Length: 411
Image 1: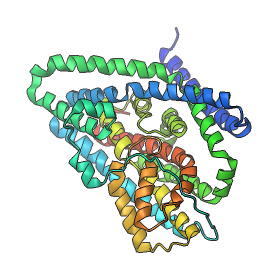
Image 2: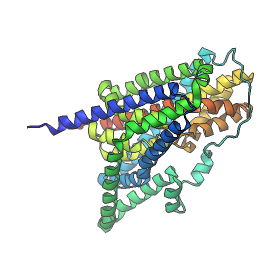
Image 3: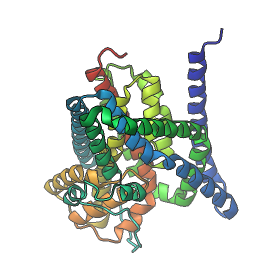
Image 4: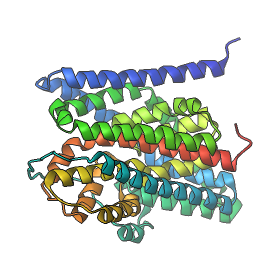
């Protein structure tokens, strides 16, 4: 008799392997296929856009419905608040730790010393940045439909929480509404599951176009800081997240990172933690048996709030560019900047280019010339790829920790 669970596990391994192959192949193509073949990269760009659109198509319905279903499944307002509060505390503490870790390492490595950058003005089309007060002011949507249409994840999250708590408060009268929400949730999950099979192709096309557009000269000119940055990413994930998963999450590192591989690779290839939400939820729920009550709250919240790696990027890039431009940034000023980054992380969207908004705001605090933005943008995608991967792994680590602490009976 065929073991269906074994077949499903083998299928997941094959998809993960295919994603990795697509990632490597995309890098090689971007490096060695000439950019002069315009039609080829135009075709890859179209396929990449179609993949991203297909993945994003059901994100907001899935996020809203999964949160409402998750709250309804808990059946207890106090328990829901506990999960949300603990996950928010987890993300804020880890972001603060990442900020000071980056600050410490950047000072030791003397990033930017002996480097001189000739600035060029550039038109910057960064994602709109919102301050903490602006974010709080617009937290409750005056028009929920507009929140979905405009892709305002925070407002969608708040509206979902309000709806979920209201469902609990009115009890049986909400059952017709819950029937619709449950159906839409299942529909969203099915569509996302189908799109998952095209992830290797989507990652290949995304990576190839990114590598080709940045070019090897840009990578080589900032090789030192990029190597230091990625080394920090690796150590942060392995030691810090790994330690939390092992001690508080009570899960072997091999099992956790194998489970997280599809989400991490997709995040690396697409530079979007928001676009990786469905894959992250699927990995945790199906492979680690993480309750949907946790994933439906933690993963979307993490895509919006968890900016650990962005903090590391800022604490590396700002000292690097300041030194290269001859701008003196005191230790106390960097502490203020990184504390501001922790608070402002809520306003940084989990989409490609979101870190540009953070850099634009924080670099102004230390007095960097505006022309430096043109240089930063040239390496932003390369830094953002690894940062998004780290942030997604942080979301999954939070899920595992909360699962082990709140649901100790689940293995």
